[in-house]
Image (cartoon, rainbow, N blue to C red; front, side, top):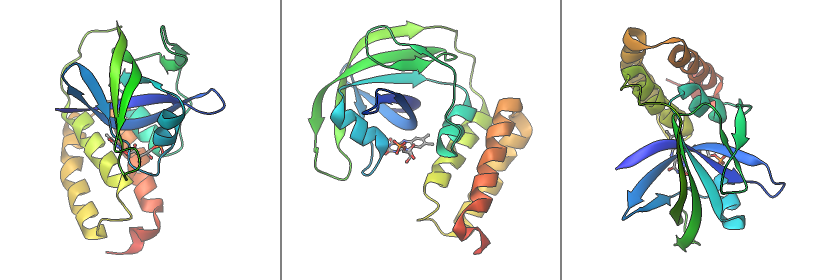
Length: 188
Ligand SMILES: Cc1cc2nc3c(=O)[nH]c(=O)nc-3n(C[C@H](O)[C@H](O)[C@H](O)COP(=O)(O)O)c2cc1C
């Protein structure tokens, strides 16, 4: 199973860089697979620690994609990174092995060093899932036909309309704004 999380990696300057990523568990190991090119990939090749933020605020996912990166952070316990302050849980990891390092999508096998639990599971929300799906569409705007994007947004928008709270609505609005500003938006 793949979980969508916010991964924190260390930049050459020592800052923590945040990006939405999928992570999957393989026999006690967490596997990250960032595509080339990406800052997360470069950072992981340069520094072998990361923070997996189990974040339930969709504004952070969409914000990282749309240039809103200033989220409250605190120091991690066992790695030289910061973690998101307001998350239900986070995992600090160390990269043990990199597979297919020269490919378009290397795989980083990470050992858990520390798991922090900060708040209980709040339950599923359809708008959150819809925003994440739309955020994935946003990252593929260059490759997807505009008609398909519009059809999928229309479908996903139903769940947002019916079940969103203020954070989900805000993230959805940021996405629509970003999609409208994309060079392909005028095409139908
Ligand atoms: C929910 C979600 C999951 C994502 N999972 C991945 C992933 O597993 N690998 C990847 O390369 N990009 C993934 N992306 C896209 C990256 O977040 C996006 O390309 C981002 O711009 C990369 O950031 P970076 O260059 O700052 O590292 C995902 C995006 C979203 C919204």
